[in-house]
Length: 76
Image 1 (cartoon, helix red, strand yellow):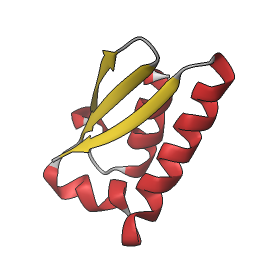
Image 2 (spheres, rainbow, N blue to C red):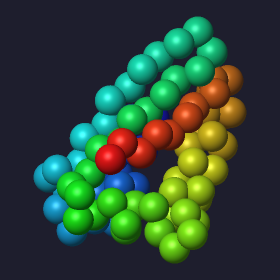
Image 3 (cartoon, helix red, strand yellow):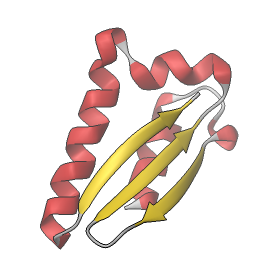
Image 4 (tube, rainbow, N blue to C red):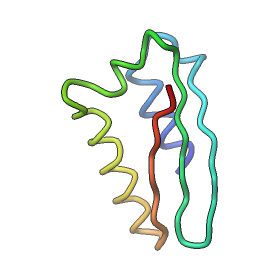
């Protein structure tokens, strides 16, 4: 799952080497905290948050498949 978030983020940004994802695991929920360069933040969020919403949808769909809830947080 972490690799999925990294792959999606690196495909969108100009500085892929500055993409970091940290994973905070709970019993039923896993939170993925995504950090990118300040200049790439707009590319990750997208117009009206559509790109971020799409990434969250993909993450939650793949989390449902393994039976865990997954949440994506974009850290500024």
